[in-house]
Image (cartoon, rainbow, N blue to C red):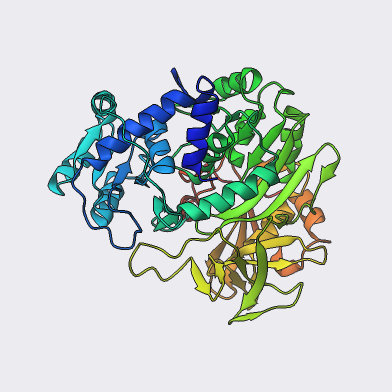
Length: 502
């Protein structure tokens, strides 16, 4: 059932059921459906532009959204989910120059922004894009007479999203309604979701993990909770009283484990980085009755693999990212041919969840297709039990003394060392070896303990020659360790990095 049809059904059958909340704003399914119908009408009345690379019907408009977790994002995102219109979802944490460049690249039919985003509003005026500060303009738009629903074609674009890479500018891609329909059907079964799976997703709505949580919660007829900004005590209180399900990247999950146990939480979904053993143990202690679903995927590919953790253990070995997600086939390939089990190569996926390609011109890295197979360049291997081990990213391989090292493999081994709560491995230039491995760790350990732990697990050339400790990682806007900043800290011998010498 299309998401728009699901919203209409929930609004008709359970009009007073709570659909979504942010801060003090709460919308029932009837109110949310009414607001999307009014915004649909207001958008249809706008002049239309040409949007090369997108599949839009005649009445559809493309609107940019830069409001972050303002409550106005709820009806606007629901409008993209359930009407013919499409949203260009921009992260307000980006630099202004990057936001303006994204507007210039796509030239949307409207911009929904915040009053204080003055430079962005000025750029929109220069580009003849109507700008609507939601604090003042949304009430007038919601006074528009509601429009009658129009059909939504499966191949229509409903979202322009952006990659969240750690070392390059985000790349734009388009998502069709069909690709998320297939994802929603798969994740409902995989995560065990029902109309009682009331969900807190405390991260930014501009990020894929939180945005998808909104879509799947509304699709199932449950209640979606978000926060204007992340606050661990507020999130814990909501989980205790309102939401038995949590969706969060590991960095936010870790922040929540520092608070009192929450036995009311029964379902956790996390993605964005692999859980290290220390964080998994902390999550099990904080959420003792929860089943934790950890998936590996990519914005361009959707879900790839899944691990399930509960009181009885884990569904896959700890040094893997799980088994293939339902309805997704994985293949390890190189130069157009499949490699045998156990060999390391590029991870390709086949299924209904991938994008067609980037909208960003002259993009030479990341997503690509080989026939029915698609990849973003991650490297891995398939193990004898069918699970997937993630080894790194093409171009991220470290070559030391002529030998290849995949950082993910070393990080996984380091993360399993007692006392280590996080691990990032980088390659630094070396005059004779080419590159040296440097490990940046959080937690509490000694150099002797590290070496004793790694010696039986890794060959000597994969053991980092330099190790430093730090309190916390700098994070990208998507909650991943910022490797570019860490490299800068190493080069500048930043005092936040404390060399581990004993």
